[in-house]
Image (tube, rainbow, N blue to C red):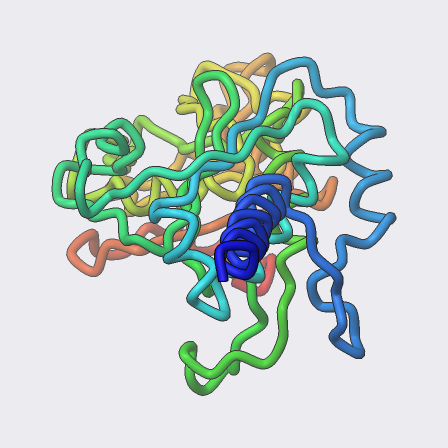
Length: 279
């Protein structure tokens, strides 16, 4: 009886230690037919080939056991742990936001923003992004809660490359004609600011009356101008009007966002220019 009890205790202890080691080292066998828990080599090759010199931290907002108990979160969590094993600059950690919300306060867009237990924070240096769990899945266009497939590798790889890129594309908000310039600290415009920043852009403001668009600018935003843009000055041959600068920008395949203020009235020069471009 004593020998049997000893054997049982040894087996239980061995099982406990092996399970704990397997969980901490992310040891598992992917037995799904489509290999849904296996990180593809293509993603690893892209991440290893990237010119990344800073660490990338992937922070999950719940404890390990909670993440593994949720099917969707377990896919994302397992993928991140596999990336950590194969890419030296990636580090994965967990934070319990329900017990210690102050630990993720620095990653809130505004004071009213909440970070949920299944959110994923990706950060490098001073840059960070907070992703909802559904961001890593392909969802139905009719219902964002209907998941069609897992797209985590592409989404996470894009997030890491955007965060660590040295020369990010520039998005320019035009000023000087009553436009509203989004600010990270302004609750009314913070969402627009963050959406553009999350897409991988460096955000700048520019007055086209006195400045030229940077060569690396790929997006120009006219956010609710209230006064018209001048089209030219006949008396000044060296003057290049904002309309001409915008025209040249679009001619080299730039992208223009125009948000119209309904209270602004008509803006003949700007509206004629937009009409010429089919806007």
